[in-house]
Image 1 (cartoon, one colour):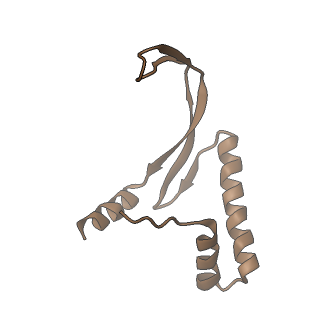
Image 2 (cartoon, one colour; image 1 turned 45 degrees about the horizontal axis):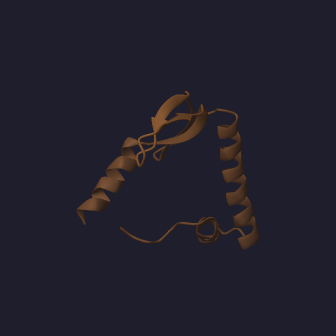
Length: 100
């Protein structure tokens, strides 16, 4: 596995090279897209990106957990969690990468 992390700067640089916008416009575009996605998720909406996957928010109920070190039971509060479900195309692309 690679230790490389794709950052916002990397995304805006790719937009700059591929689309031809200025560096500032590219950074603003990336920020705008990420802001729209996060706003939709906060509202509880799904974010579907064709050929990539679906981001969604799931409500998890309260439950009793266990501290693995001590075995003590601990209440876990209800919460919302972000989930990602990759598309079949993304799964296939990742699987192809494993073969090389």
